[in-house]
Image 1: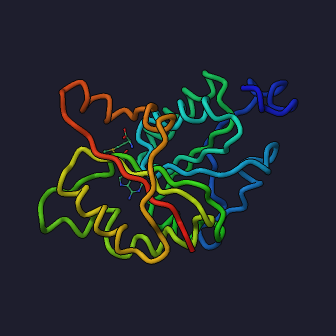
Image 2: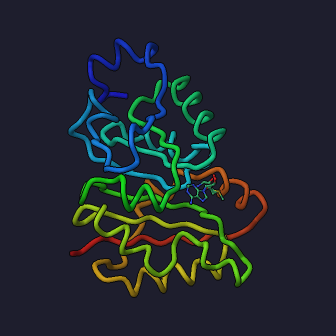
Length: 211
Ligand SMILES: C[S@@+](CC[C@H](N)C(=O)[O-])C[C@H]1O[C@@H](n2cnc3c(N)ncnc32)[C@H](O)[C@@H]1O
């Protein structure tokens, strides 16, 4: 953790929680309140971070990034917090909130360098497709939150959902297709490990905000 501040190195055992308790959901967060001792590093957000497998490994490999996991299930939020502190990972915060609401209302404008959205619930039945996170309208929520040049990283095992992701993002104003760097692809999520162990192929895509 070469980029930890002196304060963090001295005090990490004292940090009581990496869970950021929102004081209000009426106005955007102030990133410095989440990372008061390292306010100048880029912010990256994982939506639906599950048990935090990717988030923790990614944070540990990238001490110069502030990573935020957003997850609606409290048990997964507390598990990530507990394991991160045990591992001495301090450039990570967890927020318990619904991902689309968070992205639309709680992120300050043009402040996120990358969104990671991995294995979001596929809602396989046609009548439930409208519940999918990556659906028409979602890029309009992502775009104001992302920095110019910011990346959207996507993964899924579900072919039909992947096709929808590509259609939605290819059609979206202000984004162009990009490439997922190997250093990111190599960090697996919990669900991805399960799928790969079962011999199930996964799909990935990356988009970049152009304007
Ligand atoms: C299929 S799991 C994938 C977890 C993790 N990304 C992985 O790849 O291992 C989807 C996760 O997203 C969370 N989730 C689903 N919909 C959500 C939403 N609208 N807002 C926040 N979290 C959500 C679920 O609770 C679950 O932990």
